[in-house]
Image (cartoon, rainbow, N blue to C red; front, side, top):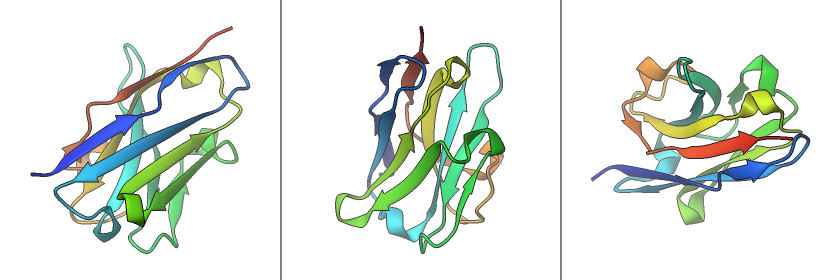
Length: 124
């Protein structure tokens, strides 16, 4: 059974950092494109970052470039999202997702399996 579990969310002040984890079971993360998405209250789910099968290609939404880094630990079957210089507008529920077709798009519609999400709150 394919399962994705996110962790690492929490409360942080502006300028702070968090590392989100996405651990998979039922399949090998290395074989697929994995994406991170987020959804703020009252807003649509939006892409954050994704990583290719080979890890040679990563994509980031412009507002996250230079602040967020996606990485993969094959031994732990886990993908991470390192978030630095956090801003109040980064407050959202963050999800990881699996793209079965591995097309490397950052559109929610392209991802078939989703985790339950982890809350990130940036407050002063």
